[in-house]
Image 1: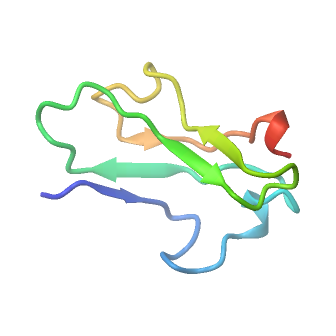
Image 2: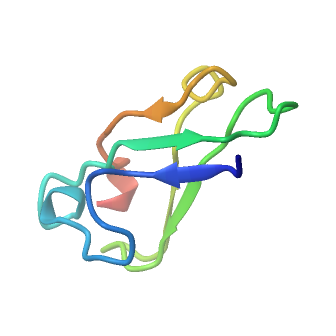
Length: 84
C-alpha cells in the first residue's frame, strides 16, 4: 500500500473550513496516515503557510514523540503565536 495522508476535516481540493483558519479558531485539522514504508522510524510534518497574516509561517506538525513510527494520527492543535 502506498503512503496516504488524509483528514476528515475537509474534502481534498475543497475549501478549508473557517475553524482551521486565523479567521476562526486557528486549529490545525486532525491528520491521519497509513501505508508508511517498513523502515520508517518516525515522521516529520512541516507545512508552509504563505498567506499567514504575518507573512510566510512554517508550522511544525509535532515532536518525534508525537510522530513516532507507531503513530497514525496527529490531533488538532492551535497554531503557533507567530503564525497568527
